[in-house]
Image (cartoon, rainbow, N blue to C red; front, side, top):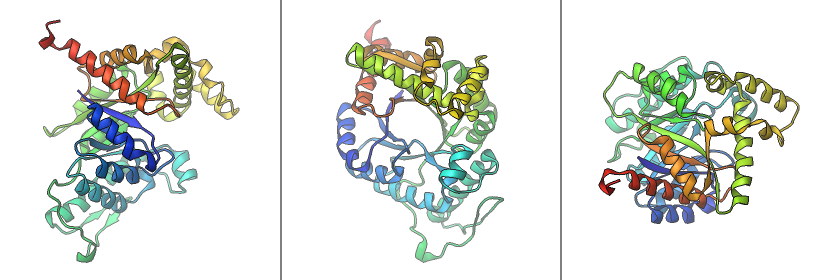
Length: 342
């Protein structure tokens, strides 16, 4: 498996972190789009690194035009020598309409068309075919020579979709090159829902990359681990309060918890929601412990199930901690290898 450091970084912190990540031997950097525009950070990372895979984890597709995203990604793919992986997500209605002030219709069909539109633009640039995409949500038919960047040696980057429900999982299988799981994903939901859905709707033998994002509560002392557990419990509670992720809770027979947490949100009880996440629910969606324990648990959770692992730390955690946990996961992988004789 490949290991990704999934982090939230301001642009000024990207260069130092990327150099540390590369020296520590991780395989990739996945920048989350939270407080900062993700492609700005990935541009800096492309210049600061020589070998890391660079992933947007995830760029909010439905808040963008296919043309603007296609152009940003094209330049970073060229700048990095072909190391970009475009991770896209739809976000939820409230953010699209009230934060980005854009219309919301049906996210799965719109995401399908978004990906197809981006691919049409890239084919125009790479292969010289006329730009012709006319759909319900996007229409692209003008590409004059002055605005065509032309082909790049590496070709277009792969597209990965973030998906939870079966409709978006089907879109990912049909039009994307891989899948990024949501942090609110249990191993059982991965095995019972995600993997079978993707397999049943994948109609090509082209590679399809499964990328797991796992919530991790870790630290160097018991006090740090306890604080991280409380923070991660809060994240689980926040995700579980969102109706878009209810399918995961329902799969485990705890849909009522989502309703309860939704009421907490409506009452503004943000600071205490995490207290409603018991140890059983926590263990469904996260690993915890000191660096070595968390790394071993991360590897055990994902080995043989996915192609890549990403560490999701609680908001505000030192991103270097992700590198330490990934190093511990790599050691656990080495210890389990037949070559070690164990």
